[in-house]
Length: 199
Image (tube, rainbow, N blue to C red):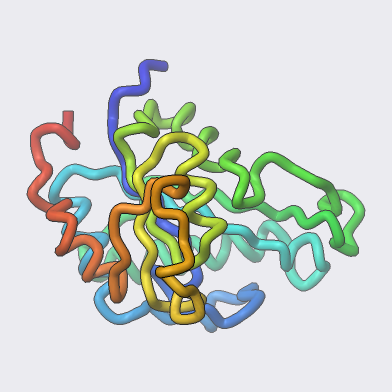
């Protein structure tokens, strides 16, 4: 598949929804203010939006991959109410110290490794070097930078505890520190990218 389309990669917890620690049931999903509207604006501008999220609760035996799928199905329904759509959900169920042996492994998909982004790019024909990774943790930025994405740190979720002054902006391809997802989308002018992104 030809990799020609740029995309927006988003971490899930602390960026799109509240980080409620090991979220395994749809009823606990809470959208962060402005996140759905920001995704809808990206959709209108022609950007494919992909969620890439570490879900070590699977490896820890707290919930199953099916539970994660259920959470994502519910999140997708909530976003549809705002005219917003996620092109694909990718999650890593692994953790090397997990209690479920099947998932207690060192993998290539757990951020800061970029496996989820690579898989999405292969499935959707995405140009990673023209794409953005937006997250609230340094591991999100590291995963994006590893495949050439430009990155954005948001100060929601875990991001409130990250000291931007201590970050190696060049190594992380860090373009912006934003208050939240809506702020990031507005400041980067991503909703003005129509022709290129929709091509």
